[in-house]
Length: 109
Image 1: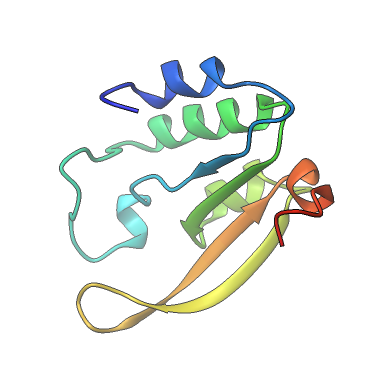
Image 2: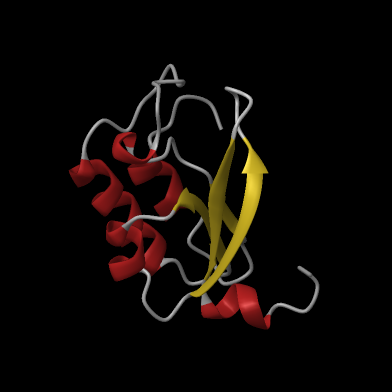
């Protein structure tokens, strides 16, 4: 999708038939290192991303590490948790958030 910022990209694809899979750089406070060339540096940027995702009219899945910001913003979304391997060789608990449309889409899972 090139160099479009999510605030431009997400509204462009706001259709009931479009699945959004959003895997942003996770909140800095949930990680041990900076790993991304393009960091979401502030909580404000994550809040803006979540606001856009909440307005999406189609299925939406968001990846994150567990954090109160996502827990509060995505109340009513289905939350799946799994242990994953991370870059440093350790493990972390990753969260997949699914909105109601994603849960109801039989072809996804």
